[in-house]
Length: 173
Image (tube, rainbow, N blue to C red; front, top):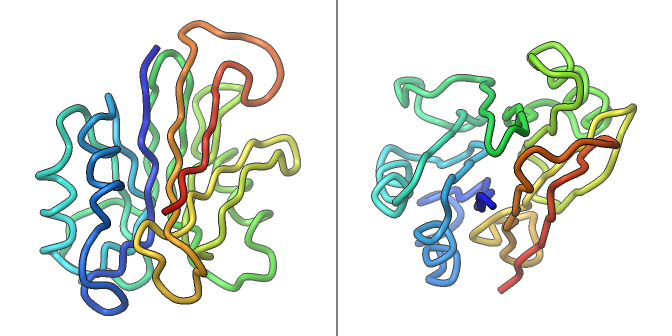
C-alpha cells in the first residue's frame, strides 16, 4: 500500500523559517511526496527535494520565483489512483469550483483526486463529483492557525465511489 505525504504552502523564507521536524520525517518516510506549491524560494524547493527518498511531484504556487521550473498543474498515478495537482491560485471565493474544474480538465481517468493548496486551510471533501484534498500549510504560515499536512495511504486497485481506496489522515503539530 503506497503512502503519500501531501504538503503545501511552506512559504520559506517569507512567512516561516524552516519545515518542522515532524513534517520532514513524514516526507522522508513517504513513498511519494506531493507539494501543492508556494515553496517561496529555490532553497525551500531544494530542502524538500533533499528530504524525499521516494518519488516527488510538485507544482508552483502564486508566489514562486518565475524561474523555479515547476508546472502549474500536473498529475501522478500512485497505486492506480490518479492525483491531479494544482496550487489553486486565485480568489478564495470560487476556490472549490475552480480546483474541481481544473481536475476534470486535466484528468485522464474518471475518478481523479484533486490536490491543491493556496488557502492554508485543510480540506477533504467531495465537491461537484471531485474529491478535493488541501493539506493546509506545513509550516503554519499565515493565515494558517496551525501546521498541517496529509498522510494518504492508497489501496492498490480499489474501485468504487469518488476517492474510494484512499485513507487520508490530517497530521497536526
